[in-house]
Image (cartoon, rainbow, N blue to C red; front, side):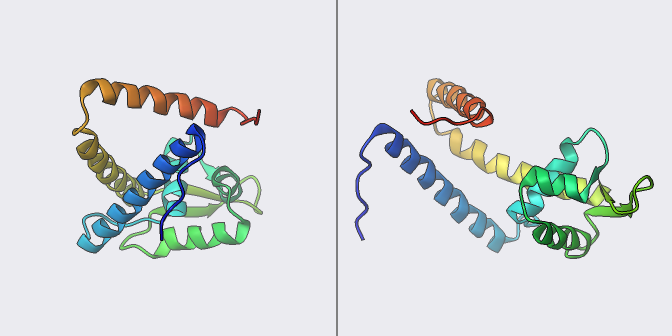
Length: 158
């Protein structure tokens, strides 16, 4: 099946970003088959990432709102991080100030798994980017930073 050509530069950029995403998905599947690193789903990784970056203990509800999943999905994510690995990656306890809330903390194993997963993905990205000339790498980083700034700001259509 032949794909149509993008009609403008925005479409062309979106196609290129999507193609890179597909390549990353393929690499992730290949690394999963090689069992190089504990595999995490996107939602599991985002949960651990939220906990790593948090200045203090978070509740399940705070994590759920941060990563943007439904409450039922968050319950499944929490259960999986507690029991689907050799050791629990998180620890849940009743909030001492509000018994309706559950506090979530990262375990030592959770931090280790997070760092191994992140390092493996970063290593592969570095390996890929090494093939680019220095000038292109610098430009790529500059553009990525601009995109992140735009993404954090409300997107508008003109």
